[in-house]
Image (cartoon, rainbow, N blue to C red; front, side, top):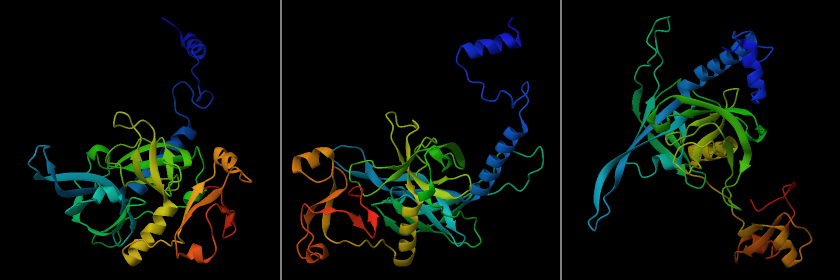
Length: 323
């Protein structure tokens, strides 16, 4: 039988990093480690009451034969309360095509004494109204009746940094009030070139049902709205994407005020300049944005903007790409 020191030498030779060496004494967790765990627990306790499960019902096609039949379909997703009066953010695809939308509010356990049941009581199911949806950003705003509801603030996604710790809350596969932890893999990821929408990429486990749930920073602020995953098998592979909170906030405020999102257009199609494009067109630089098309009688046409113009700046901000 190997002694403790023999095991340690074996682990070291195997390349195992003893990260806690010096802070953990002979299996006893250090005060720093206990403190870190307690901070995570307190964060979850603050965030959990504002995270809801979205339950939808609608009609869908049954079977793939020549005769089309309709059947009732049930769907679920996640959401987050962002206003104590009952405004909820979720994804547009969660409520798309739904005939009815309900929100399952988590119910706090009244008995917190030692020995009480670990199972939380069944949540409260409330009818929800769809205030508005924006399919371009995949954001929807719901409203439930209530006041003084637990709500989370929207953070500043521009301040996120790669490697920052984040938490994904929601109801993956219908398992309500679940939480996973990870880091920000990328602060701005485009799924397609010149896509106007960008996403926060995270390795915090996100699965079907997490859609619409909040991505939260260590201060308990919503920095993103979990939207989709990239996966070969349909489950989490550590590549999840969340709509940045700054984009979500703009959409939320417009939907709340106008019922829809109003976007200004000047009438141009812009394209990101690539080194290959710059060489072929003999452009003065191999980065930035070039005007690919100008709509007739548009504001851009009236201003004298022409095809092949290179856009240098917008409101004093250097233009690095078409987005």
